[in-house]
Amino acid sequence: MTRIILSGGGTGGHIYPAVSVAEALKRKYGSNVEILFVGAEGKMEMEKIPALGYRIEGLPVAGLQRRLTLKNLALPFKVVASVRRAKRVIKEFKADIVVGFGGYASAPVLWAAQRLGIPTIIQEQNSYAGLTNKLLSKRAKRICVAYDRMERFFPAERIVMTGNPLRGRFTADGDIRGEALGYYGFNDSMPVVLVVGGSLGTRTLNEMMKAWIKSLDGVAPVQVIWQTGKFYEREMREFLEAHPTKNIWQGAFIERMDYAYSAADVVLSRSGACTVSELCLVAKPTIFVPSPNVAEDHQTKNAMALVEKGAAEIVRDSEAVECGMKRAVELAMDGARLEQLSANIKKLAISDAADRVVMEIEKELKKTL
Image 1 (tube, rainbow, N blue to C red):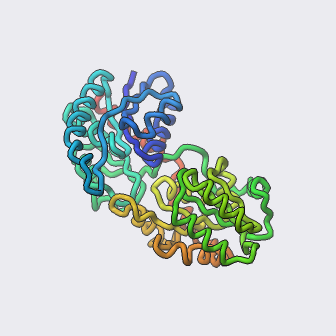
Image 2 (tube, rainbow, N blue to C red):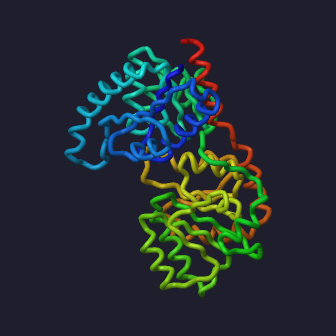
Image 3 (cartoon, rainbow, N blue to C red):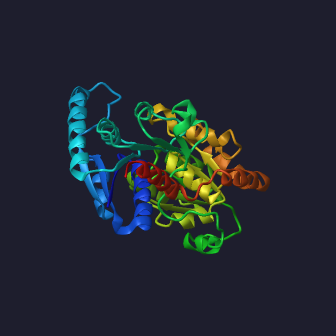
């Protein structure tokens, strides 16, 4: 029996790559592998992971608050307690290897494993590595990455290009486009723009849509799938009721992302690591609006990694309300540019990322087992 700890959380961008790898391990080894997740107490992984049928242990770790707050005074004590608990969990589980996917919990788990002589692997989702992963990489056996030029942050000889593991099926197959258009009540007479801001939503993209709708005369020149997010659902629904506009579908969630991607001619989106990887797989012309409220401004760096290769466009968060939809409509009408962007982003897709990470886990296990 091989025992593997997967650690990461805080956001879906850390959780779901780890779950994708767990699923790939189960597909390959079945009952011959035992998997334990380690997350942070009070974070979303403590609910999401058990709901998917996996065991999880929680650590009391928390992140540094950017504003001055008394909570930061407790941080060193939480880190020490988390490392101690991580060591105990690793020993009791008898882990053969630990894989970290980022987030609050992965740092103390990987640090503890490295001090116990357990091999560790890092899966870095972003194009710009954070300080924690840079420090942990010094003792990690392998660093699985999704972007070029990561030797800026990690030892070059231990970097492996795997891509970002994703859950769900994302392909550039256009066979379901007609079905997808029907699902949203659209037709193929006009282009479709997908505006998506994540499960909670994005204030900037919602304000962008409001400003654009106010500039119209009740009829949008393109068809729009507008995902408002749970947090803004009521406010944006009431806005659209007060400003009825044809050719717009609005919803808090998108249950069928395969339909949304298939229907879309242009995607206007944030540039979190997993979202970028999904868009590469579906080969969609994309305008990124990076969130400015993330560590090391990594969403801008993720977006620019594609922009520099002619694989996407970018609109700054501060400019999006005024010109985001204007640019999206212009792009939707430019067939040659759409083809160019689609072809270039498709070149960056890695469809078997989870299996590639599993392969790296196997290589390390063969050295120790």
